[in-house]
Length: 326
Image (spheres, rainbow, N blue to C red):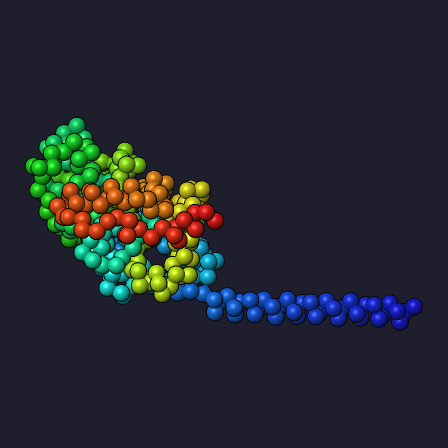
């Protein structure tokens, strides 16, 4: 009887050890396979810690990319993220679509994969909204692309007379702030260093017209990368969609992420969170022809250029459609 009990115990312990050893071995194999199975993409964005940076940082730090077996080589640049992508130095850019559309119009084989957000363009004015017609000098960092597009749209909405406005290029936020404080410019994009309690300082929020805005921050790439790295692009578009949905569903967690990740005071943490939330909530992630045609039209009107190619060939919605349907 004792021999039987001993034999049964021995057999049980042996199977248990085999199971544990096999489990650990399989886990190691799975890890090896998953590492080998990772796709890689090089990404470029603008190096300012605003809306797109929050989304990419969340994707890296919270494991969204890793869960989709995607490795991101992320390079923030001071300006011209789409230009870097178009040149082939990066696979994909997360940036304003305006310059990429201009390149597409001139023949570049670039594509819009998804529209993760509309970046709010809140502004500071020396005049209240009811006196917007007094705005005469507006500062933007460049006179092409999104900055002047956003400024035009906001000024139009608040009733300024665009025909009587002079747009000036000012390269740094510090210089813009100094010029605004000296009264040399009347209207400029809001950034955290501006004292909203200073005299003759009025905040114009884009919340009021963001839903109807056409300007987007897009996931942009070239046809060459679509042909060569479709699996990686699909994982990237899926990951970004998952992040935007997390932001919409988890307000406090997103706010805590911004608070812990960046060196901002609480007031700007609240502001940035609200901006990111509004940006991802007021956009169609899957690019739609009518929406992007509206952007084409605005580019043509505001920048006074002719759109030489149809909007249909600029949109590549397959990855976004798949991400949304999952």
